[in-house]
Figure 1 (cartoon, rainbow, N blue to C red):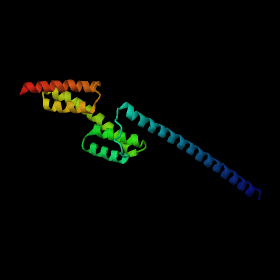
Figure 2 (cartoon, rainbow, N blue to C red):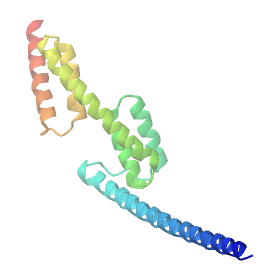
Figure 3 (cartoon, one colour):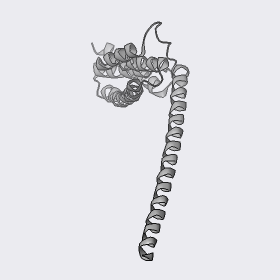
Figure 4 (tube, rainbow, N blue to C red):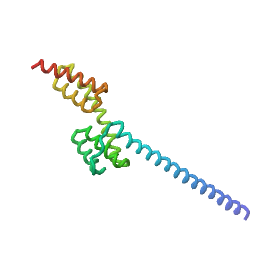
Length: 173
């Protein structure tokens, strides 16, 4: 009888310990979720503020909705107008900083722009060296369009190569 009582007492004590651990895990998980949500909100707020200041994005058209801007951005991205698409997605985030479609599209379009600029910068110089001036002009023009900061090294180099390709193509014909 005493062995059964010890087993029951051990089972109850073991069950209580497990229950206490489960409760502590729930509290820890809840605290972690609150901290993550707070950090996410702070990041979204900072992104929304920085979008307007850092990138000189114009304010969204009056009366436009986040959904309309997201749709416009998607249309522009699919049409190859990457800079316009980026602006539309950033304006969408100005209206609704938590709009996940626009958040992911800003990242995707920014990466797409970066990759295009890198590829076209190389092509711009390569075409110029190969005396393929029309192709050089096209690549250089695209780099300049996608790097609107006229003081950036990429834009300056593309402009120099563009001007040279223009000048050389005039001499060829």
